[in-house]
Image (cartoon, rainbow, N blue to C red; front, side, top):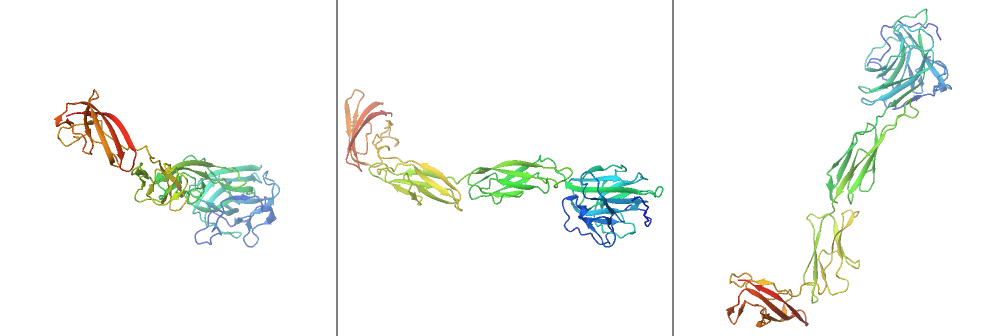
Length: 470
């Protein structure tokens, strides 16, 4: 293992192949590396013939060799032995998907198989364009690479190294090799044994999540968009509840709920590779509210509520109106017309009458408004004012009875404050504040009425007081 290997003299470090060389097969590089199965390849010289793949690892230069493994984490398999002197030697590389801005953990076990250093150290690089090189290949040109670490020098005991790196650009390969700047010392070279190489994305705590809701308030016929920001690259995002959502995964979703709804986005960041050196799990959640305002309608009743007259129920809807509507009667009956004519004397017609609306998709239904109508005897059937001003200005000059239905017969008796009868009025013209053509003074006068409504045969009576002001 310590025997000197001859090599064409190199004046530069082993690095990345020039663009003119054939590209390594990294069309779809993996996002995780856990290399602890190399025992399946057996031992011996890995570069005796065609390029060898070793659990996705390939020889990059020289003759790295499989050794019996005695690293603490992988004692049942094999390790890789490599050497270097005078700026040249052996190394291995593999495909890996390094993305700019994402932080990665790179770790491996390493030990020296002799005590020779001579400026030797372990170099770990992210790179592009490496190809498998034959034995005694010419030196490669440094380009398109970023150093991960080169601090390891010497220790005869197995040591686990762990590095953290953030690529400045995209790289598709990881390169590991020993580097000795000077010539062999006492015919001995700088030698390293490496094992159990792992690369995993690193995840930071999620602390900057936010959801943008546009617009913040919608009606049934509108759609709001919800977009999460602050999720680390590669995160998976799921949304709850599903009701009203166009989909339940992704950074942005569309929401058309039937009612005001609080939506929660749960973010699960890349959790690191299985069996990574420092596996990390990071997740977080954030909620936002979509305010929903169903279409607004007004209900009103019109028409008489006495003498069997029909009550007219009217719905006033906005224009445009989202969806369809229907009346639900007190007995649960459904009527699709917007305007209803109700007999208030029929049992159970008072209400409540509810106008129910449904959105165009048929998903959302709401009781938009409820109305209780007047029944017989509850609406004013007869009215007289409590003051009048017979001063000839044409405004409120006469004291006369009023009714929605008119009168079949009417008699109005007027009295002074001592109960003396002043005058009887039997027509709709009412009292003009005179007795026998003479104007009465300002005062409070009593009245008593007897009448029959035009829509009825019953005789009704009423009494009260009126103020005469000139």
